[in-house]
Image 1: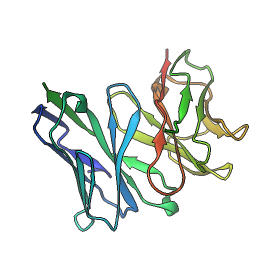
Image 2: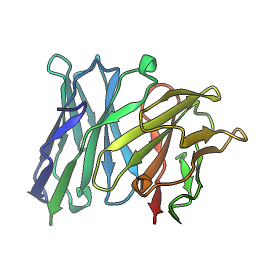
Image 3: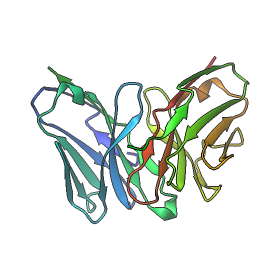
Image 4: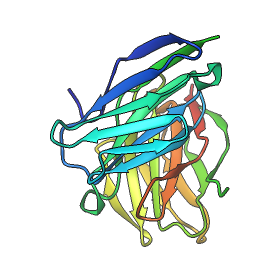
Length: 113
Length: 112
């Protein structure tokens, strides 16, 4: 698989349920970021977790990072219809790699009212 | 909250024509990027720009592409002689060097 692969590719849940998506990557990272993209729109930065962090919370979002497994998860609790979007993880390998982001293919989340 | 502004939001161009996509990054940011997303595919890195020069570029960023920061505020991506396969959303992003990046809302380029 390529750097920053999300799993599952698509997820359909009822409003109020939790949504969990995973991201795996291959190379060493400085940090990992999650972005949301509504259909045909721009990328919205959700949360950043550094390589020395294991868990981070922001509102209804919870992100974990396991650098030994090179994987991260994003949990959205108590989902709402407005959470319907594609979610991307992106890895930043640091200044030596130009601080560029390498994106995964995304998870399409549909929250049904 | 500061924003990255991209213009135009949608550009239609004939194959072989040159296009310039414009971006106004956040004013105190030092790192600037262009990414593209072909419909239904991943967001792909094109080029990063720091200290008035390209710091890294991908294989996609060939001689057809160029970037410029002409006046200290704008950051442009020029595509010479556009091809059909250049049709995509082009995103500009800026960052302070640490932490996350702020992306613009994108320019949808359609080459016909």
